Image (cartoon, rainbow, N blue to C red; front, top):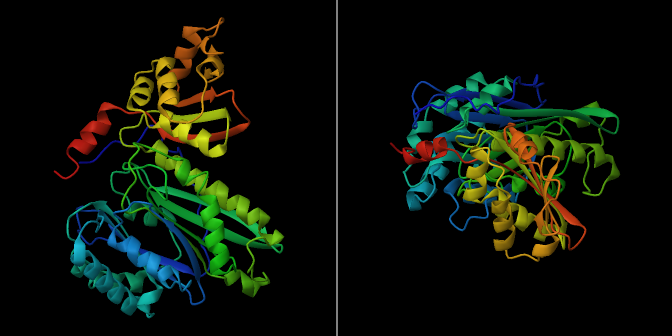
Amino acid sequence: MSHAVSPLAPKSYPEMPPVPGVKFATAEAGIKYKNRTDVLFMVFDPGTTVGGVFTTSKCPSAPVDWCRQNLAQGSARALVVNSGNANAFTGMKGRHTVSVTAEIASRAAGCSIEEIFIGSTGVIGEPLDPQKFEGVLADAATRVDSGPWIEAAKAIMTTDTFPKVATRTVAIDGIEVVINGIAKGAGMIAPDMATMLSFIATDAAISAPVLQSLISEAVVDSFNATTVDGDTSTSDTLMLFATGKAAARGQAPVSEALDPRLADFRAALKSLTLELAQYVARDGEGARKFVEVKVTGAVSKSSARRIAQSIANSPLVKTAIAGEDANWGRIVMAVGKAGEPADRDLLAIWFGDTQVAVAGERAAGYSEAAASDHMKLDHVRIRVDIGLGTSEDTIYTCDLTKEYVAINGDYRS
């Protein structure tokens, strides 16, 4: 079943420059989809370091287990990603598929299986035949090139309606480095790392432990602050690869997470991950509205986050937004059920710039027309002030439409 491109999709895509030391190719393996690419094979030059974060699900996929195990040695030479089958809840067969896939990839890339990373996305519970990769990866290895990155993003899509790419160029030691990222995700999206698949590559020279620190930090207010439906996937994988090619141009390698030379890189990585995460929310299954939920005045950031998640994940709040109904009673409900410190008589609520409630009751100057006008926009902003502290947090989500039910009602059909 194909779906119309989300009305919240970007109107244009950035020019994605090559990342020195990274080449890739896409292929059609026919895993689930017909007449479209469904495999990405990315090859990294020797010396590439890696960091990654994964789902907190207690039922992780076989590829997640594989990546976690290989991450310990900190170097990467190839990445295999397939769409259409998550290879999750597939028992011993799943583990066998991952190891066979890694063997096929290691032959194609000319490296050890410990340097192969694997990501799979799609249906859970269906065995994935590793022979789907036999020949496909060897052929892909003969075609690898430094672009176009948009094709890499297309190959890993499932119910996504548009490819997700982002790029940044920053300096370390006055030497320019590129950061390119791709992501996929539209449903089964809820915070707790990483809520989807995303792969980021740079030519910066940065050690694996520092990459791990950078990506763990970047994810907090980006992918972990994004939710479509409150369901954390089994397969969530976010990986950051650094080829180190900038060292040849004079960038002294970074081996300390607190190195002040990383300031611009750290900021650019956070901005790139936030952009990709917001694309995921904008491509939420059936989404018609991108929603920003900001909670201020909470007793702690974690408390603000849990309240914001309670609002963002509420089907009643999300359906009200879909119906363009400024129903702030549902916001009060979601705050009250979050299990976090809150005081009914201190609450204040805004839709956009319109204050709808203050001090625990409807605002005196409340304008239903102004609030309703804001709900008609494709970017809805909800703000709640708890009135108990100074901490805040923001969660990104989308509305819940009939199309979401239609997509997920026949997902395996």
